[in-house]
Length: 225
Image (tube, rainbow, N blue to C red; front, side, top):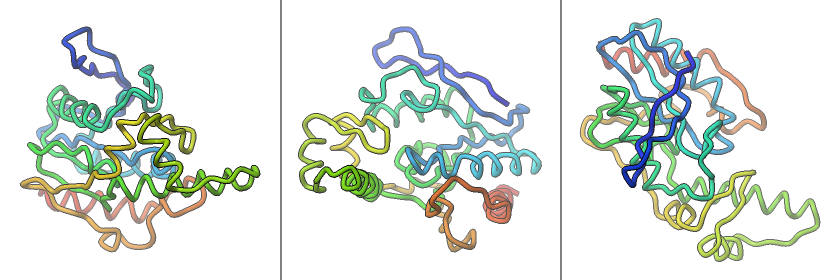
């Protein structure tokens, strides 16, 4: 279930080795999973893997690659860019021979245009950034520090920011401000209302919902049948 994959270096140098969570039996249908980011990744981690388990039981391979700077990756967080992550997602799709993509929340900003698939509750980069900045302002206020959203964005655009423990570089901040998920040909949205109940990213702590995992995996399996 835990493997590695080689992410090609953009300058043609040696590839970097990143971790890969996979249910892989070399089946005909292979779904690249692009998870939620940052704090939402923690809240949806169990749910994401449970959806993958259900796809496995439905006879569908699923592949969730680490991106540079995420989880156990040795790559520095502050050096990552949105375009770099998009290139990485496309490289993973090719390397892992993905036939489809399931992009979750902000993962939709990286979905390779050449793969059919689904965007589950897609989120814009601007909305993601606003939520992280709001959380930092609240935390700073509790520590007796006064910060505003405008001040933080000015700093972030020139020097980067640490938000929720993540060191985002200036290029990432600027790109997130204007990033919107786009459905490519063959890609369809799955709204939270299609899955039922409130999204797990709204909860204060990481959690799971087997019924929601059943529904999301069932929608994908039915579309592939």
